[in-house]
Image (cartoon, rainbow, N blue to C red; front, top):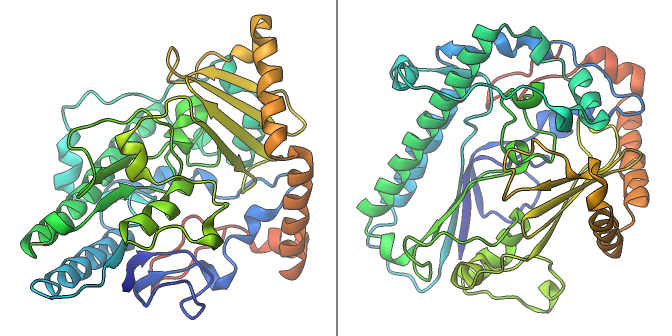
Length: 389
């Protein structure tokens, strides 16, 4: 079975065994170590240059646009070359675009798509957004402070336009799949690694467990996928592993018997709306470990050293009203914490994560050296250099 990729992977390098038979145009972490600045904790550092996103919006061309164009063209060629091939073995092709990561420069034609569109404005902060864990992230990433109101509007328009550009590239790849007569025998999964806060609650980028940041698109098509069906089961990217195993006919062997994820093909057929999901975040901008339980309509957030949050996503999909501040939900909060602690000890996991991050910092010269070198924005396209600030 051929397992190949094109585009962003974000492993250490192209030489390590990552499971791909071949990597086309791979993007890996900077210098094999990535954003070491993001491992600094206690206290969180303030990112110099974070507000420069305001200078990376509007009409223009970037290395990311050129990179995604290369990815698209190679992906289309790869699929075209498979037309008419007779093989009993399945194949997996991972196509990974960098859009819509910033910079949010876009060609004029895509920017003009939203000329007369009434786009949503960034939602102002409400009490639910004033949580001290979120405030610590805002202070560490002072992006919103640099924006004028007009620049926020341009940034949001640019993000939508850049997403449309990425959609157009996806369309070209799907057209190549159809042109190669592979639609009826191929399962397609479209998803992303994270979302974008886009100014809501004065936050930009990812790095939170909000629906804006942590929620991702998920669309499936192909054999075994019901046409036109919208599943209401909460799912996670952890489910991708057993899904790909099933799609390729490998199935789950003994080594995968304890995998937490479930095949999305099974979930597409039989909804489990009360399924419980667990997510955690310890990365850049996290003052402490953040943990989420999603069960049915409710979403529970546990922050080590901070008060919890609770949202009813059915009544409040924008997470404007923190039910944890209402005494009526105290029993539900206790129940969620007990369930979380059945899976893990959040304080112990937080301590372990921070110990690993301190070790990373020390391997790279210590805190003073890492701070002096500074941070960079997104990973540069192949052939480009990171801009440390």
